[in-house]
Amino acid sequence: MSQLKVGIAERVITPPIGVPMGGYALRSGPAKGVHDNLHARALVIELGSELFVLVSLELLYPTQEIVEKLRTVVWRELGANVDNIMVTAVHTHSGPSVFGIDSEPERSCLDHYWRLVPSLVASAVLEANERVSAAKVRLGKGRLDGWTVNRRKPQSMLLDNDVLTILFEDSEGPKAAIVNFACHAVVLGHNNLFISADYPGAVSRTFERLTSAKTIFLPGACGDINPMTPGTSLENVYDRSIGTFRDVEEMGTAIACEAVKSIMGQKPSEVDVLSSKRCRVELETLKIPEVKPEEVEILEKELEKKSAEELTTGQLRTKLALARWSLEAAHRLQMRARGSRLTTEVQAVRLGQTAIVGLPGEPFVEVGLEVKSFSPSRLTIVASYTNDAIGYVPTLEVYDEGGYEVTPPACLVAKGSAEKLTEEALRLLRSLFQGGTP
Image (cartoon, rainbow, N blue to C red; front, side, top):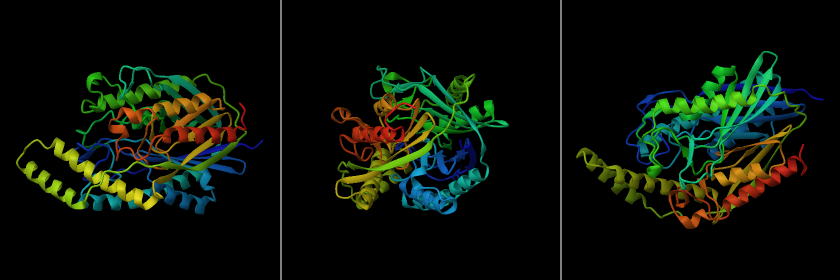
């Protein structure tokens, strides 16, 4: 039987101070400092002739452009099948803006940064490939209650609090790890102007400190799941301005400690299969509110005037951000959608008795719960924010309830999209596991 081999490497991808930050329309200015560096982490897994590459970015989203550029480089340099390259993001709201709510001067600064990112990430993949060594695998399944809240239904227990862990060990001890937990990376709110990987960064730092294994964090299906940190109010659960860097460290530490505890004492699992598949999925799109460029210019001038007068600008700032965002979303859909249909992808990898499912955008928690419940694998990790940025993916009944997550441009896809992604994910898993439990 072929020997499993694993390599891991990382690159700092922290943007320069002064770039606009992503995730919050209410944010009042660009980054004024760096609290903790952002990283790209690349894990290369080999088994016989099969090679799989998992990339995690401490960013808001992996854009389709970044994914395609990275896959091209890795295919050219390593000969890896594009079906075997998965790119995820931790979805930190304290990183650089990806698209949509920035002025032209700010975009210019960002464009230089985004041109560098694919090359930095690719170099991490190539280094990880050079560092592969024989490895064994330990699997962990823990649970961490009390740290999350369903922000649309705060009183409900519709959550996914599993902490799932894959630990790779070579002859010298723990080498690499994957930790999975379903929660938005929004411990820090719009009032934070310091670059940070939020709690996922703290998970990776703490797990590595405890085990010496470089750690990739994968967020689960958490489109409607927020942190429940000490200052969180159930009456105003969307307000994240109460979050602190101490909260970041405490939440990250809690998840990392649960992950470490879950693998302690576990026997190595045999890995005799490594295979990956992906499929294209067509989703119906919603209509984006029509915004004209001149409307954005008027709002920009109005905001500049009110800011100079030191008047309250929160509502105006949000209105401007949504107008810019709508323009950008409409442009992106025009570039990549065919009529009212958007093509994205679902990906799944089998690693022995374990599976990792990559879903695009921000699927709601029910999606992850259903995929895990009906998966034929012993342990299934669901990773959202994978390979594409398509906005929120709510479940069927949520559209009729209304609210932020179902309103364009935050949501681009129509009713039935979540169910279609779930169906395709389970189809891939059944194919990988031949319809049975390993």
